[in-house]
Each structure stands twice: as C-alpha cells, then as structure tokens.
Length: 303
Image 1 (tube, rainbow, N blue to C red):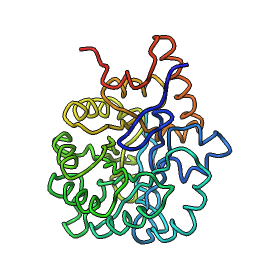
Image 2: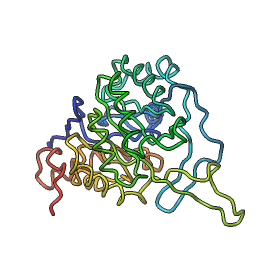
Image 3: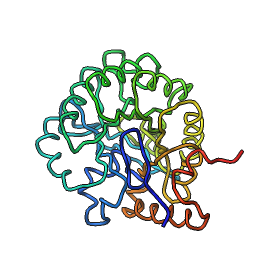
Image 4: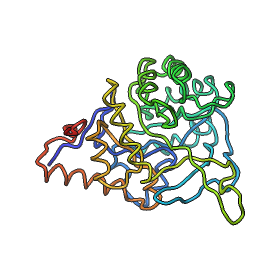
C-alpha cells in the first residue's frame, strides 16, 4: 500500500489532504457525511480577537465554475472559541489547525497567544488577506513590509507550526512568500481568493452587499497552480496548495507543482465527501504509477 504520510515542519499528516478554512465549519458539521479523522487535517473557520457579525447579506454569489463570497470572517471571537468550540475538537485525532485573522497586528497577536496554549491545536494558519484598519484598509498580505510585520509579531508569541496564507491579489506573490519566510513562517499556504465582483444587469446593482468579494472554485485553479509553482521554487519551507481542487487529479497537479499538501475548499459545498474521494484517488494514482510514497510527487513536474 502506498505511503500517504507527509511532513509539514513539525507536523506529521496521515495524508496530504486538508480542508480550507471557511468551507468546513469546525469539522463537526461534516461528521454525518465523512469520517473527519480520515483526513490529513482540518483547518477550522477563521477566529478573530473580538466577535464579528460579518458583512450584510447578500454575501455570496454563484459564478461560472466558482463562487464569490464576502462573508467577512463572521465568528464569535477567540474567547468563545476557547471555551465553547475547542472542547468539540478534542475528538479529532488528525491535525487540527486554527485560522487566525484580524484587523490589527495586536489582534493577531492576541489570538495567536491564546491558540498557543491549546494543546490540541497543532498549528495556526495566519490569514493575512484581512484589511489593516490602522493603515487605510490595505490587506496585510499585499505588501512585503506589512506581511512581514504581522508574521514577525505572531512568531514572537507562537511556538508551534506557523503557516501563513498568502493573498493572490498582489504584483509578486513570490516576494511576499520570501518576506514571510524570512519573518519566521514555517510554511505558506496559497492561494486565498481572487478579488472579483458580480453585477445584476436587470437591477444595475452589484450582487454582493460589499460590491466586491473573493472568487474561489475551479475557475481559479490555473492561477493557483502557477503561483504555487513559482513560490515552491523560491522558498525553502513547505508549500500548501489551495485553489479550485475538486478531484484527486487536481490535488496531484498541485503536488507536482511543488506543494507538500493541499486544501479542499469550495468543493466541500457541492459534495461533502470530496476530501475522502480525493484521498482514495491519490492512493489509486500512486498504485497505478508504482510510486511508493506520496512525498515523491512534490515538485515532480517534468519540464
């Protein structure tokens, strides 16, 4: 039987398939559909320092081969997470990763500090695509100095595996990846959603209350693959591929481009069993190609 185990810094995953934050709730929502413990790990929905209601409705829109969302990191804050949600995650024996988001560096630090004390949270994923309210609303992840500053500040208070999730809405994602690596990131995950919008021609109004939103789904896969390939060649830390993955073939393409693991996001909405089907498909691919370990696929693109 082919070996599916992969290593991400200090983490050992039973297979390379993770769930993308915001598409899998806190895992418990999927217990009726799959064995959540069969996955390499789960990345739970974003947690911020304070309670957030998110954006007004409508905040989702379907698009050809994808969807737009402007949910706005709706959650009840880190203290609620620690007291009420964390205990429900203790039943999972795979890798449980918290997604940390905020609108100030101080907010990120507060959440990271509190997550650091939770033994069952083995890593955090820093979502630096959030707007920085103190710097005119520009997302932290869109400039090297701000991406570096938030990563460095969190690194000082967080001593487990630190993954930084990169925004694709930048001139050079490689420069941002190198900046966060230098600031102490143990791994990078990419890509977050691409900025898009939808218009209702009949009403002449935007479909989303926020006008613009994040595009995800199969439509973004070619962009995500290209960015993963570029970043994987440039950094020395592991890369986690995200963007339009809905089949084992998609996942394998990301591994070949240089990813050590992948995250499944939007596909969880259309078929809640996508993740386990992908794991089975990767195993089948390894068997057919007589490859002993899934790790051998990482960066295996033949040029």
